[in-house]
Length: 378
Image 1 (tube, rainbow, N blue to C red):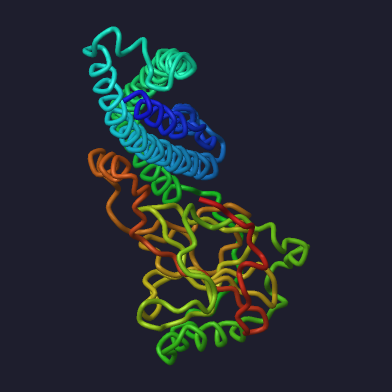
Image 2 (cartoon, helix red, strand yellow):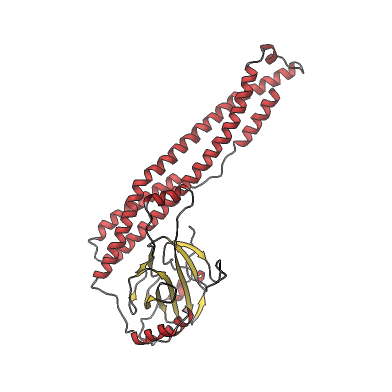
């Protein structure tokens, strides 16, 4: 019986090993809440900003970043809670085994406890083993108490996130609406060059591929009338992503149907804001083939950036935009609070139902966006 007790203690102690350090989900969620608070302040300040479009663009992006961080914190909290509950279940079984063995020993005659068949030496060894049991039990009890405390904190965090989340989702939508209105109301319109709408319409009607449209678009306008792009070559590997999202498929990576496109497919949240990665001229803005609303911008005379899949567009062909200017919004319905929390509670992270297609063409040839855009982890 004592031998059996020693085996259980040994297995028990081996099972209680340090866990690899992980990012604290509580800190992540709290930082996200602070981001959303700052975004709310920025939304109020944008009302009196000199450049409301720029201020509201930054506010929408701040809300998006805060909501993504909050969802990630809640996702990690849910996963951590699941791990802790499983650990408690395993420990509960081992504790019941030990309590059962100790109960059997306690019910045995005193002479049986004091004597050992192998003699005095065996008796001493068995006593030492019994002496190790109590500290092990105490250590395990302390760990269980700490685990239960952490589970309580994680559950409270998820409960408290409801109010923060509702405020964030409401604020983000208000910022998007205000941005759309500010763009409609602006009087200081961006610089424009003279586009030829008749030639553009003719090109649209005669094109059945994105490649053909982009190639024809490159030859529509005399490059001398376009504003020069300065130091665009120096931006390789430094361009920010045009939208908050996750890379779904890289260049020439086939989808489930076996279709490969020479650009990136980025999964985004509903109504995510799309902005210009760098200063550029808008060469086309409108519907195109099966790509939804499309923006084609020209950051340099030999380079086009194609952005397809938008639902709402803000800019028009001929506008000259600065880096970070708003181009439009993705489609979809903004998550309700319960949907947001449900996805996080299941540990599935952010739902990204919308997709933005991005292609870079230099001298009418597609190039890998990975050459130009910053690497990004989400």
